[in-house]
Image 1 (spheres, chains in turn yellow, blue, purple, red):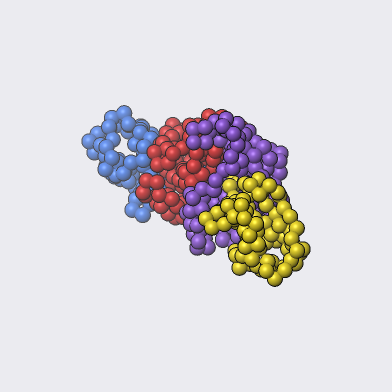
Image 2 (tube, rainbow over the protein chains, first blue to last red):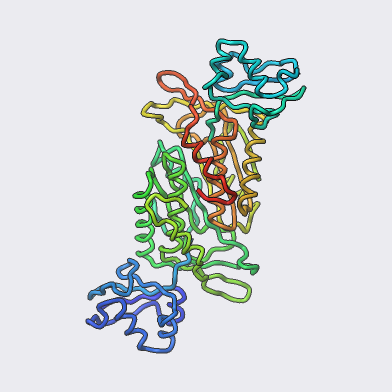
Length: 84
Length: 84
Length: 155
Length: 155
């Protein structure tokens, strides 16, 4: 299983702060997980589709689309940060 | 008359914190006043002569050798500053 | 090296005194305080709520500070960032850097702020008269962080 | 705009709070604190005495601040510099700058410090175990001030 977490505007738009997904080779990379989520359509496509601005962290480290996801990992999707 | 003031290392080396001098055309510029003081020789030449590092202010404004000195002005000689 | 994320306000004088106590021979302390503004683009701000990613935030801040310590000679650093609902005029963030060199203290303090603004997982939501909205990330903040491409380079 | 030269210590939190109160919508406050170091070139410092040129000092500081306000968009500034005999760890100077723009606050704070170090008539005399000596002006401080040749340029 992997933990997927959503923050800030994404958390509100997606209507959840996280979910558990069964790990598999099709989500063994960030790009694969994003494709999996996009396939849900609707708000998922709007928030994570082409042109959407978001960041991904794997195990609390910023990660690009090629980053590996292993069973047990925590993956977070969130908007560009605005602290400070 | 003009007021001449000395600060910090210069004040200590010259053994005084200031003096009054009668204004005249020969000291109507900073360069002229410096020549007048240098002519005293000894410590004056050492502290204000060639190679010596000092600054001059006329009426509390940093001034170059060409700056005018008028009757009643206050002229200060001091080392490069080291505050902050 | 202090890194804290907290809901409570912080005491600037106490943070600076603690930093100074840890680096008695530093000589130079540069610091930055970010405050909630009372106006954004002409609209009165009623409050600002800061969300963060617990666990990642502290890690991201520690990494930014560690990178600053690789780039400059620093005696000590303190980063305190608040989360939760804050009112106009309240402090959001303190970054303080002690060094033997004034330039290093300034550069590192600015670097930490620029990276914090683009790398640390905090998000701001503004309450305006017309309702609440998430603050958008600024191009100027991305540009500010992008300046620090060469180790030791200044702004 | 606060400019003060005084023998007494200053309260950093109070100075920053007063600055913030004067500029309620600034958002960004950059500051610098200079401290008496306990060591200079490996020698223990017993004390540091700061002499200044009363009347010119305040004028020079006010001019430096005015120049900073011409170069950057600043909401407010505070400069407090101590004179007299100070012990290691004691504060010498505070420069604080409030602005709507983080970069302007940082640049102006650094500019004021660089110019203060080369233009304001203060002189330091160190008491070491071997005796007292006047501190020599540093080339690095002259170089730091010389950077600010173009209005609005950064370090």
